[in-house]
Length: 209
Image (cartoon, rainbow, N blue to C red; front, side):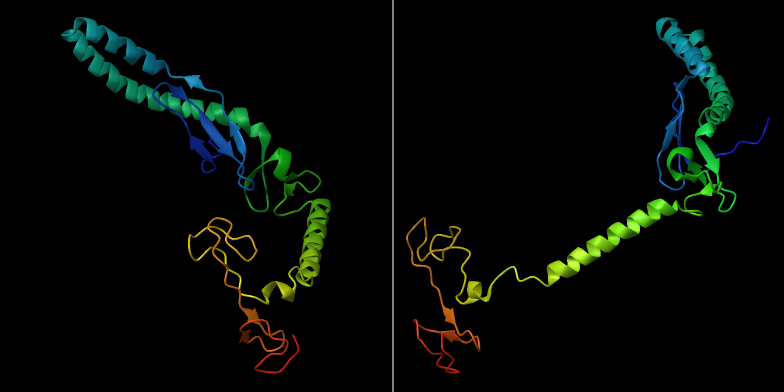
């Protein structure tokens, strides 16, 4: 029998009842599941177990022998089903001659170059991605230069919650829940020092308010 390929990029989903394998692309991680194939040895073992439960005695010994035979038969059938599963999914994959990876034909294979797209990227797709990245970078730079909050917003101490009842404050001079006055301290526009009351000039630097 020919040597089996796909010995790394697959998951074995087989159980005692049958065989199924999942093969995935080395580049994108997507892939295909093979068709589920039932296990003939599990049906024999299951029939012996049923007979043993009904009659016991010698049939119980026969069931034990059946399980041992099932183990050896299952392993043989497992190898055969693995090879069959590979034949089923192999048409959906190509192996890159440059890096050796098995990749899916639909997404990760560059047909024009006969290489995977990791070794021979699709230039149009790369140009589009670079263009998008440049647009995002440009947008971030422009956004960073915009003043979204004015200095006026921070002339007074901002309280997020009422000091008396803990209710959320959304602005205003009094708490909407308990009526407690919201303490608001004014700061100098120039030096930033706190000021009591509402003076026209800063007592620290003399700047007009």
